[in-house]
Amino acid sequence: MTALELDQRRLATLAAWTTFVAGDPLTAPVRPEILDSWTRAGASVDPGVGHAPLADESETDSLWRGSPLQVAVARVEDELRRTAEDGDLVLAVTDPETRVLWTYGGRVMRRRAESVNFVAGGRWDDTSVGTNALDLANRLDRPAMVFSAEHYAPIVHNWVCWAAPLHDPVSGAQLGVIDLSTTWDRTHPIGLATARVLARLVEQALPRTDLYRDAARRGASDTEEADRPGLVLSLLGTAEACVDGRRLLLNRRQTEILALLALHPDGLSLDQLHAMLYGDHAVTFSTLKAEVSHLRQALSGQLASRPYRLLMPVATDVEDVLGLVRRGRVGAAVEAYGGDLLPGTESPALVEMGEYVAVALREALLADPQPDAVLGYVERAPYDTAVLEACLAQLARQGRDRHPAAPLLKARLAVAGG
Image (tube, rainbow, N blue to C red; front, top):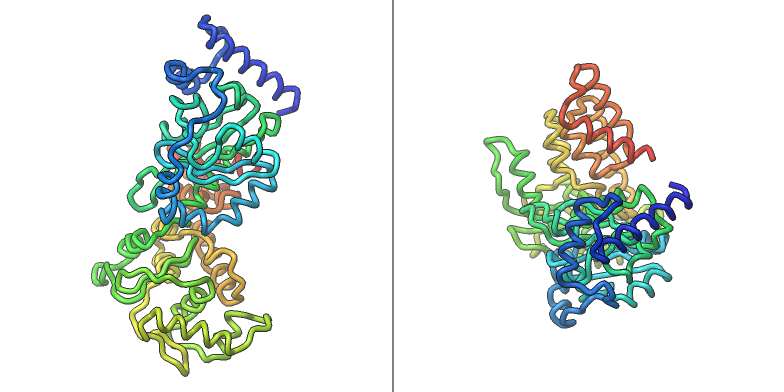
């Protein structure tokens, strides 16, 4: 959309808003969800409201600190901050009541956000501050965009906001939303897709031991134990380690060592572990030994030396996904695949293993592009057009162009292709 078209759109929304606030019959079309929200807001919000009301600071902090959402945001905070800074956006994460729990903003948008209480504790439901994307996404449980004067309160008429709901991947419960906001003149079609991608990023980073246990159950044969004792290690998309149901609190390096030992059950020598973990980085063997010592304590001594080897049953989501691929259960493999293996790791062996898992899953989808599996996969790899094209081509060859997933696949392809 050109700058002129954007300005014309802004003026049209402003005209519709002015007519509504004046109580006159609307002559310009307004999206139903916007009109419904305007009506809700009009019953309780003064159009001249200067800022969102603030909840109690200590209560907000207690809700956030140590919560699953706080853990997830901390795990992906670097990427969220880069997104905000690169696009001069302000990002926000809310609770299910549309109370802001966390924000981060680029230089310009941060100041604007603070001036209207778009900060931790700010209440952004539409009965508190009027129509906005956070409230729509929360109430309707779907991604939402609100542009310029589609906001009920003029204090944010200069904004455009995109928001997507956040769900617990195990229970499906709605946890809140993630929102991206900037000035109206920076509106871009990719904004809503970006909100969806960031929502998925946060969801994948949620503590997910129960999710992996469920995936393991689905992947296990009838003769296998569903709830396996020992070490259960999730590495894809995030990192979570539990021993007999007890979560281990490990630093990044200890998690990488544990991952390498879990993926090499026959054990590794000190030289092998050092090379796999550090590659060419100049790190001393004593540093590695110290990390192993701390890890051994966390595992209650269940880590042998010469070679380094785990002394307990081990289950990993990596082996789960690869096992499902080997058995041709592509849909289940996609469901169990949480994303890249330990995103950001610099361990050459783990980087290689991560690429191997990703390529194996992708090749399985290209060979058997089941529509539901492909839709699940592109949630994690939204720009993989080849898999989308392979699925649509197969549906066309089979005369199944009217398959219920076809419109979604085409929409994903359009977004991915820019």
